[in-house]
Amino acid sequence: MPANRQILLVSRPEGWVTEANFKLEAAPLPKPGDGQFLVRNHWLSLDPYMRGRMDAKKSYAKYVELGEVMTGGTVGEVVESRHPRFASGELVTGAFGWQEYAVSDGAGVRKVDGSKAPPSYALGVLGMPGVTAWMGLLDIAQPQPGETVVVSAASGAVGSVVGQLAKLKGCRAVGIAGGKAKCDSVVGELGFDACVDYKAGRLRDDLPAAAPKGIDVHFENVGGEVLDAVLPLMNPASRITICGLVSQYNATEPYGVRNLRSVLVNRIRMQGFIVSDRMELWPRALEELGRWVGEGRIKYRETVAQGLENAPRAFIGMLRGENLGKQLVKLV
Ligand SMILES: NC(=O)c1ccc[n+]([C@@H]2O[C@H](COP(=O)([O-])OP(=O)(O)OC[C@H]3O[C@@H](n4cnc5c(N)ncnc54)[C@H](OP(=O)(O)O)[C@@H]3O)[C@@H](O)[C@H]2O)c1
Image 1 (cartoon, rainbow, N blue to C red):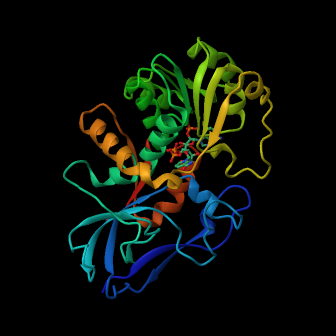
Image 2: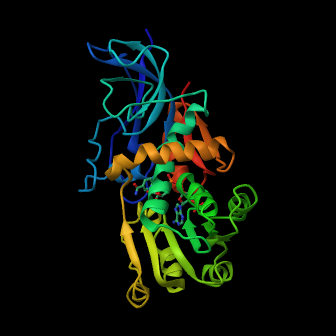
Image 3: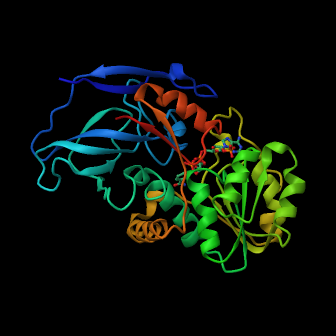
């Protein structure tokens, strides 16, 4: 009988995450009871929010206890079922954690149609990150044709979709990303109008050149110095969606934003959001994203690590910007 290899959280990071915060263990294979099914996970999603779950702090979701399996979304195959709605062989996605097998009662589980798109897309453009881009841009910021939309972490899972949605809505899409290779991909492959490499150290000169008419919508994934560089360029009645602050997730001291005056004088609407707050929007978002991916109007990149044992290293790498597109771990 195969064991269920799992990655547990065994210590809390002080500042940057290290591989020593995790431990690989082999547990017995769980047995599904009545009304349950067993999933063999094929793909594990690595996401910035997981860094927050490692700290014993109050947040929008409960943190992971020490000794617990790390929380995470996966795509897997039902391999044994005692559930009326889930049959062996079906592909599903759910919060099954950093482990090779999981038992579920079906709550919060979505079936995946592997004939329409690669199953791994259910963890990216056709899953939580894609819906995040859709909700934060189209529902919250509501860009209008001709407006300039800027997005940070532009080559990542969320940012890459934001810029392409902006183009679909007739906007000028400007990305901010770390390094020339990422910026070349954002413009050359994804079709953004421009991309600014913040690691070149000239953000305050390069960003106004890329957004000569100012910024109408800023989709913030990063925070810190990037947000400070964006704020003075915002137009009157512009919108800022605060989606994430990844530059701060491993920081011991929060960055103090200097240019908030722009929010006042430009009457900027700045709104944070959590994608799970509005589950009623998911079906429409997934339908539209699925259609646009199918039509080739949204392109999508993945970076794949091999094997559960490499998940901690890949997670730290993603937080450091080593990923291009969605960071995944292939488990099978
Ligand atoms: N509100 C919600 O419901 C929700 C849902 C999903 C995701 N999010 C947020 O969305 C953001 C993007 O998530 P994702 O899954 O798409 O991750 P991702 O962009 O694929 O990966 C994270 C990226 O962050 C960038 N980064 C890391 N440290 C940085 C720093 N100090 N300065 C600037 N950029 C830095 C890196 O890109 P570079 O190489 O370009 O630096 C890295 O590739 C995160 O902040 C995440 O927390 C929010």
